[in-house]
Image 1 (tube, helix red, strand yellow):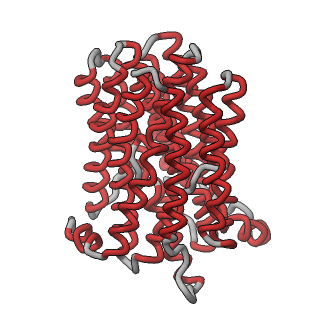
Image 2: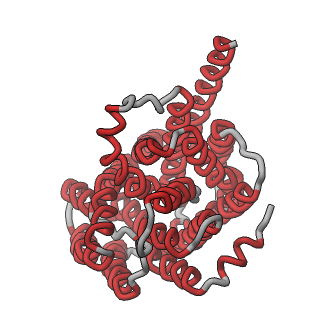
Length: 431
């Protein structure tokens, strides 16, 4: 393990400044998830199934808008590409708190479509500023700084929501995000190297695709959707060539299993997110939500650092099985600190399972089809995220707070066991 790589990279001033800017710019939206959930439950009087459905709708909006946003950055430049997001963030999030649930759904969908693409912009710029083997370490550092954001944002959002200011809180999220967009336009980090070659671009894309999903639980929704600019931007251009040269020949049973792991991970993590909010809100400890998120995200940081420094990979399905199984004990936590400590166990495996699965896909698929494969990988992860929130919400409304952890944890375990059985049968048949 070589942790000195992190210190060497932070010594580079442009990279250090970019990571700091990216971290600050992400803080407003990191509070939005908790604020929106508690606004729907407490202010609008809806259940957690409704809150989960809203999160799913926003996730789908982010996923659909991400390729267009990424393409606009490539074609018109960062400053022009950010204008729609800077305007829409303030407009959408100032209107959302004042409408009924029926109007809230289409608004958060549009908000997702036009979300400020901080994640992908920072990733693109790191690909330009970091060279060669430094890129993976740079993306890992970006994931770590994002975890730090999600130790701050949800805690602040919970305090605001439990003080009865969800309307003001959501409004501040919109205005602050627009200001962050304006600051990003002023800073204008590079997103493309002068005279960049195709080979260099493919290397940067590969590194970005592998590292972008090495993320912690709290922001898996954004990370899933933001895979699209890297994958979908090339898959459209490669799609015709691919169909003429063999269609989906790269889509083997092993790759399909990795997509299932990605979907399962997204489902478990987004469902756990809703479960944490429900458990503490039902117990009257909404203001302490941030404590659990700190432990959960910090555990993922530690897990990601350790796994990233390991020399031997671990099968993604085993990592997911462990994460899903360790999510189940969270259902038995009856106070904030117990829930926080129990969340450390599945949190340790979050970054490793996502990183291992994406890297395995990149290893199995040839370079000329890798962009398309990673685009589909992002779709699988996004589908899992969109499924997990409403699934957990339905069981929370029926069973109580523990239902969220039980539903997604059990579903994840069953998915992994089925996958392992099928894998064993395939090996026997091949033998």
